[in-house]
Length: 113
Length: 331
Image 1 (cartoon, each protein chain N blue to C red):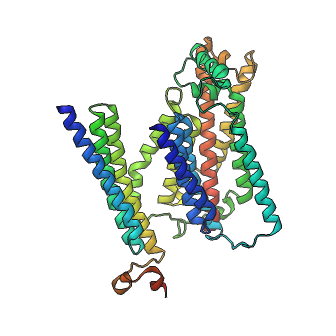
Image 2: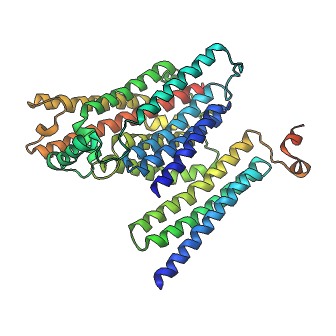
Image 3: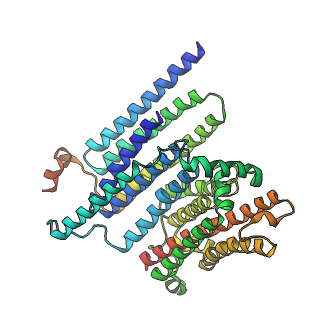
């Protein structure tokens, strides 16, 4: 009984994590400019990592693998937002301006004209 | 399941490879090459080659990307436009490539299936290595035994190649010593990311752990995946991260250029000296059994020393190449 409950919980977490990552991927393709794309990618990436690793942790049970997964999770939660921050900061420094107002509603080719 | 993952990874790898060839933007090409390396590392891991996967991930996806970006800072970001017309010479090229590809594909039909137990290499060499590792060297990781002891010549050659490559890059780009001799203070250009608080704090947090991982991989290579090549790359990565965050000058004051050059040459020399020590003590070149009273113990000493030599050389070469590029880019 307990095993089935753990299995179900772990599969729900894994599926939710996968959905998160999928949404992030769609967001990267669909969003209009660099900053919104990064917003889509970085948030879902962190959430997806948390859910997927928690799902695998449930599968691994109380073992060394769970501890390692926890360390990996801490590492990912530290690095991936920092990488997103560094990317956005350097994009702003390089002169990429966020698209606001009217230009948001235009497609890429129209905005360039 | 493994086959499915393998096919998935190799398909992604092919798509990435085509994108690398197709793109004109060299920055994009560099990023895609990092992805390609990571995919190759994942497929190596799928084939249970953890040592190679670790090397590929550390060097291919990590250090090479940084070095390519350093090289891009010296050139332009976009590839020059080529002629698009199909001339006879390009048709000839296509023809030659096509014929060679067909011959190679034809040749693979004679190869034994991947991992097949009846393949010649599994029938003679591999069992011998596995048994001899247990009897002669007595360490759990047979890969390290093959790399460091049985095929010590090859590994010495590889280390000399790494050393030579480092010397070659330094000859081409210079060590940057002349521009630094003026005692250039910390200017805006070479101050790294010092004004970005978040990456710096995180870097300070992570660099000790990356270094620790590097030393673990170095000294644990006999028991698990890892060894000198991987450890050298990881240690170099932590120093390069420090240089990116705190500025190149600071990194150079931590490990000065002279020390790096001594590391490049010293590691290679250490490897060679261990080999010569075998001759002096009355056996063959790179035979570690005579290094100690007990042959197995001697093998352990030899492997420990030459892995240390490999690690020192690889770290020295990678950090030197990074500094050479960085000095050119800011000069």
